[in-house]
Amino acid sequence: MSLTGKLDTSKRITFIGGGNMGAAIIGGLLANGYPPTNITVSEPNEASRTNLEKQFGVLTTADNNAAVAYTTGNSDGKGQGAHLVMLAVKPQIMRDVARGIAQAVQKHKPVVVTIAAGIMLKDLATWLSTGADGSQLPGATAPSLVRVMPNTPSLVLEGAAGLYATNEVSEDQKTLAYNVLSAVSKCAYWVDREELLDVVTAVSGSGPAYFFLMVECLAKSGINLGLPSDVAYGLARQTCMGAGKMLVDQKEDPSELRRKVTSPNGTTHAAVESMLASGIRDTVDKAVVAATKRGEELGKMFSNTSDTGPKL
View (cartoon, rainbow, N blue to C red):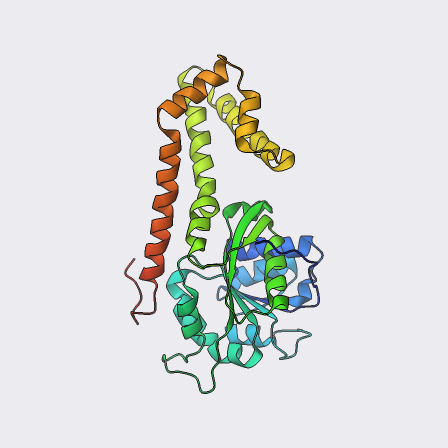
């Protein structure tokens, strides 16, 4: 399921973590006209905070709770709270970060969006309802949560993403979360079961690596047959880019595009038949299944069943 709408630039957005993906989303928001004064980033590293301020003009802090409450710097929020909190931290520290902001989240009731791989929403909901010591907060209610799987092309505003929301998320919150991710994702889709995000991960989250591997192999084959390295890599890169643009712009079925470029008994026909004979369909299917299963395993590893977390 997809959802579209206009980005509401009046909403206050907080990022917990100012790494590459968080910075990419911030850049996408600003490119779409979002005011930097409505974005706060909580980042423990002082040099990173300085860079974010210089690059984007956003508000920064080292205090996660101040960021959720929106009381940082010259913030116009003045403690009214963020409308959306983006958790852009590593899975290994998510539990501690979530418990640390639990009281602020319970008070201000933002929609909390996580882009951390392997963190299941049932665990995040538990952490956002407990204190730093793991005890249940008095009067805590189930938080509004959205889990997102973006991919690395988001860094160049060409991302693809899958999203899943809990029942507590309102339609307005879903729209806000979707439009924030759409700032860096050319396509974004809601799924109706959280476990489908493992499949999204296998297809688009890990997917860029599959294409990088194909370009790597294609270029090396060209080099082995005599092409200079720069020529082989240049041709392979641009061919990947051009084919991708045709897939997106022409919106035809990939099999039809393949048919149009494959002349009977020609060079492309010979190459494609060789790939099919080598089992390329089965190879890709096994790769996607393997990535999906690994995603399921990571979810279990980071589950709330152990207070010490997984051994990585």
